Length: 130
Image (cartoon, rainbow, N blue to C red; front, top):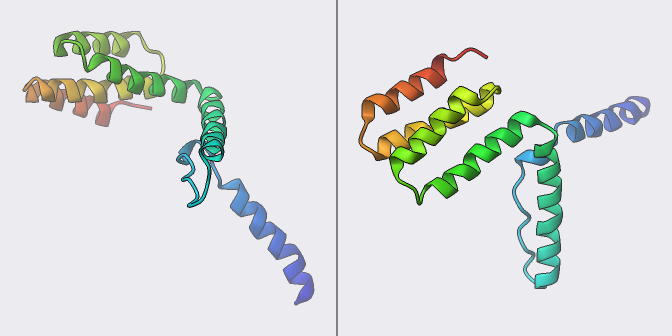
């Protein structure tokens, strides 16, 4: 029994560590008595690790760029935002980026009251290969 535990225990620990992913975590919460310095340092370390994980994958970086562009396009005319995302859809090489742009197009069309165009974008996301 002791021999079995000696090799099963480490295998379970390794399997658990292999399933951890740096990019699906959130910034650490501040401990009850933490100073601002330590809270800022923890958040900075998380940000660096998260950014490094995203930067290793071009698809993730492209999707992150689409999400960030939404923040800037909020201040623009909805038609300008729709034109921007349509250009991304036609220019992008990554299927993940195209799907993210189509989801943003859905939101823009929905906000403009163009339900037919919004549904069309959702249908294209659902039926697109790859």
